[in-house]
Image 1: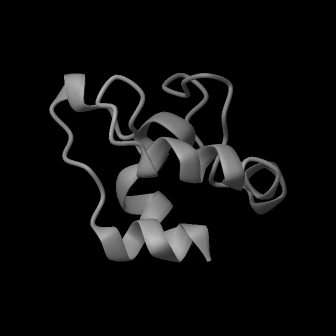
Image 2: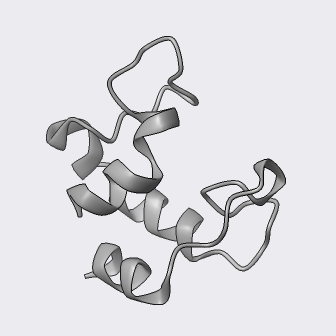
Length: 72
């Protein structure tokens, strides 16, 4: 899961406290582990307003294989 998060999530939910959004940290396993259900819901959402990474910022939806990896 870490490579998926690194490529798609760390810019807003990674080690840089100045860029971190929603007080959600996915680069630290202990912090991410408790949020995986929420992360899965957001990346799997078909609602562009809820989906992560955000469509309104020009990001594409994650590939189905990445969504399934997070689900597993």
